[in-house]
Image (cartoon, helix red, strand yellow):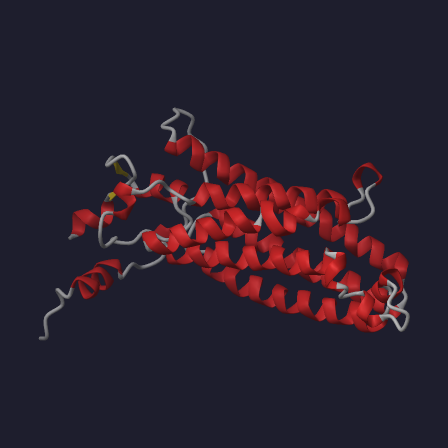
Length: 265
């Protein structure tokens, strides 16, 4: 059993070290039950790719790059680029027994989908706040902006909670969630300022949130490249900062329980 905790099989049946494991799966090392990691491809980079493309585009527009002002022109990232790949990866992570990766993929999938609802005119969310049914007027109302601000505030607290658990994975992944909850609070503040009519501060907070989101997008890009390089057996050695060895492990006991091998004293 001890040997199983030190080496894990990946999709090619190749024995890998705990350090390499951290580059392939965004989850603490576990004594896996079954041979899913030998029979199926690693789905994590697929979900990350969808997240990175969506996050980078979103961040750039939030910062106003190139004169961009709204997200209407890229509403597809909220419905397809992010969610489709993230949901596909989430299902695969669930099948492979990668609990934390499954949670992360599901979280960001519904995050993008929820913003897709806000950015799709046919849903008329903002227009419902206007007495005349005008979208632009509704999007400027206190009620609409306060509601979105509260939603992002809740997301910020949840992302902070998730960040605590990332401290058992690796440094890059932990930094992604650190900047994620910071950006969520900044965007929440921007909506609050629109609700109170302080548009100057709202713009500053939006740009700050966009810049913070851009940093986490770059970190996501980096860790995706690291995973792909490891899967493709490239010789480059890019660090991610394994944090799992700082934590005590009960993986052997859990694996024994799952196999029904724990006997009563």
